[in-house]
Length: 337
Ligand SMILES: NC(=O)c1ccc[n+]([C@@H]2O[C@H](COP(=O)([O-])OP(=O)(O)OC[C@H]3O[C@@H](n4cnc5c(N)ncnc54)[C@H](O)[C@@H]3O)[C@@H](O)[C@H]2O)c1
Image (cartoon, rainbow, N blue to C red; front, top):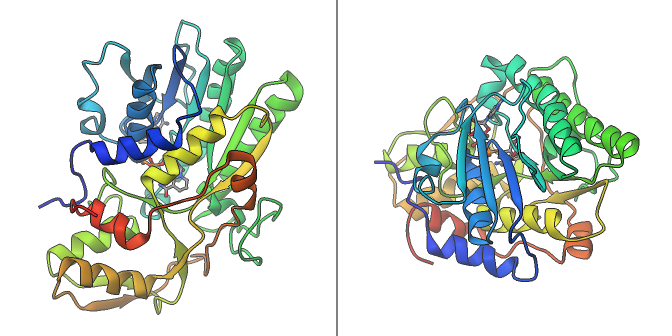
């Protein structure tokens, strides 16, 4: 049973389209790197609905063709298999490059640190090069992880971070920091319109639940539906703030679509903080599972708290998240809310 990958859902798409009703991507040609991943596939689907021509580039490192198989016969949709850390030229005018390509799961930091570094440094440089050549805007998906073990909560964009360059997470955290610096360098030196989204934990349908990926929500759901022990790192008192995919994609595309935001970095996430322990209990309740809790050692440098300050997103994007965790989890488990 795979409860985390229902087919494309009208509810999700309609919800995002409602949040983008004042934004037009009609007749735009948009390159989405990482377009067959969790967030990228929702982004491609919504952009097609908004009348855009979409080029989805992915090397299937962590994404899956199934995420975009339902789009492949759409006349305005093209899929390219390519590693963005190597140069790429779409060979036609693009108006927007959305650079999402990167493995993003903590379990992958151990196995693929060089790929992760390359996707966010060389890959970002290549994506910026495309944007420069075709005079396009670039949206870079950065992360809350650039804040490292943060000292201010809720964490605003002005916080500069507390990251261990030598630690196991350095390949991801520092790569995203370098990616942001690449964006700002192209913005300053070449006048490129770049926008940086600092994404906080996001969940929803199409997230992979298998062991190679293992982000916390799909892992807990998978364990719960199999009545297997729910594996909690540390004492479970560490917190995360979970944003449902519809809210996230709306925020990302508002950041790309609202005028006047060149060179801005904006937190996109849900500010409601949950302990991992309470998350596990909620998933057990919602699935009616007999799973017990199993405690594992805390991985090194795992952040203690995550909570975005979203004042800037509210002010600049006219955006805030709407879906409560309980409701988003039910959606992800394929139930109506
Ligand atoms: N989902 C989250 O909670 C979250 C949080 C913070 C940041 N982000 C960022 O958002 C982006 C998308 O994340 P996601 O959750 O959809 O992850 P994902 O793994 O589902 O998607 C990433 C996609 O990029 C592809 N990819 C990886 N390296 C590539 C390369 N070198 N060339 C081409 N394609 C490549 C993968 O195959 C995958 O389809 C990532 O950049 C990630 O760092 C996500």
